[in-house]
Length: 432
Image 1: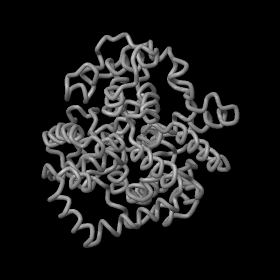
Image 2 (image 1 turned 180 degrees about the horizontal axis):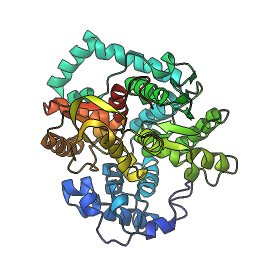
Image 3 (image 1 turned 45 degrees about the vertical axis):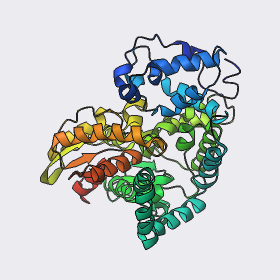
């Protein structure tokens, strides 16, 4: 196993061997429930990883396929009675796949450019986003969509999947420090994110406005970069660690009570800094201190505020989809729902299979469009059965995926981040 994980901190042989093959994970796994193939289950994939690590099995095309067919939603971790850290296993295995013959040179090049050149450099990222925004809003984009619809239905749908670039970028409309509208209760550091900054800037704006209404001084570091989440989940742990260190360096000069994340994937990875850098003599202490201050926005709000004083202007039927990296990785599940239940005139309707993945899973819905669509259809049917007018979810990938599902399945439902609804309800000066 030393050779298989020669350049990795994770996972250890202990993690691999902790699976007792009980099968409790099977019913929680979306890909197993699509195929009912044992190798497409967490239990089956763990055996594949174990055999390849021990040299009993070569790294084959089937191994590569199964590691990438996995959503890495980590629902199996929640279901597992033995506490197997499956996410660290599959992400480490993806590193091996990424360096094998079963990953094309073109795929490596695209990921290298995206994860190592564009995402870490906000200047390049915003330039790329502006070009994409021009394409999306121009006749060129409309013409290209019509051509794609004729030549390839899959390419046409993948083109539709791309989130719309925001009309503004978060870091360009806010100063580095935003003062609270009421008496200051906390100083919070807010990473605007890479894709959140350019494609979900409205949600970022809602987050900042809500925090200031609730008495928070908000710091937006101007030298921030990608937190490393996307490369980590796509087999580039080396770059992920590099970006984690860069994030720690750019944030260490500030004095703050909490780091607030409104992206489940980013928040989950920043909480992992203390694990992925635990053996780094220079950064281990700083990483632990930082990770211990990271809070999802709903986690922070629930722990520090009473929302019974607030009331929606009109009765609203709402439901809540739980992002995988919030419920399964961060173990934040009750907090968002308990906030919503406190607010008068909100009718929170339970969503069947609320913790079931929506099929986004980073770039999974692009590279595995067909299975992602089947998973999305299941999610949209459950949402439809609630008859809710608003579905809430706290992750950009989920927002984009469910908004796409709303379009293709012709559903009359508004898809919002919880902070957007809260920001609508909570007015300036409401706080008691």
